[in-house]
Image (cartoon, rainbow, N blue to C red; front, side, top):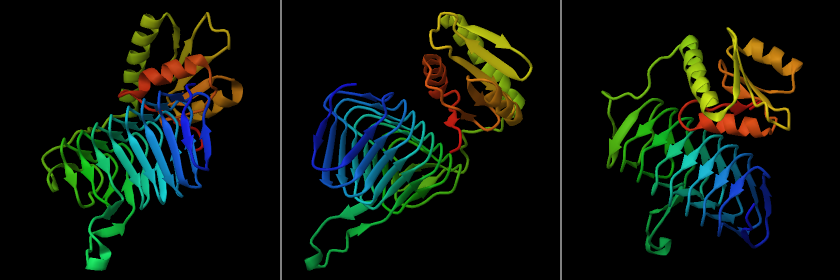
Length: 288
């Protein structure tokens, strides 16, 4: 892990499995807590400025180079999120970001506004929390205003200026952003279809990586003969099967039905779940 710069008084908890780039700064203007979870990646030049509110970043989340994270009230970022270069995440008024959120480079998420002097009557001053639902995608160069809520799987096309809230599954665009009711980027997919996709991906990945794959009707077993830590990754189609397997073995067990896995911190676990987590399948830690 690379060294990072700390200014002021605060508590930092960075997972040993997290990757920290060069010139990352943690600046405490007031005491607070910053927590970075397992398998996270923090790029070069990322800056965290904590003004009393805590910052929590969950597992598998990536902040690319030169992102800026501000916390006055709080910043909560879920698992498997991705932020492109030079993005701004402002928790001055509080910001909550769900799982699997993708934010393209140069986007700005603001939970406060401040401009002219209040003593002169300026009304452009305030803090309102922002709530971004699971699997929201801001394609790039998007701006989210304070007080906005975006429902699950909202997609904001490039350059969207989002000044109001939108329901789940909306596709929005423009300045100010408006819903495009004729567009949709999701389709219904059955559990059987999900299972077939996963088998196809793992067969290809194991063949390319020299891994062993055992396939049964409801389970996939991924093994590495050369592994020194005994790691195995098992995929179960159903929740009941995953529960039984977790009780019987010490393996990492991923369930396709509910998208969970139990962390074992093996090298194979990281490699397999990292391969899938881009845009194939994102498994969330058990119990969350």
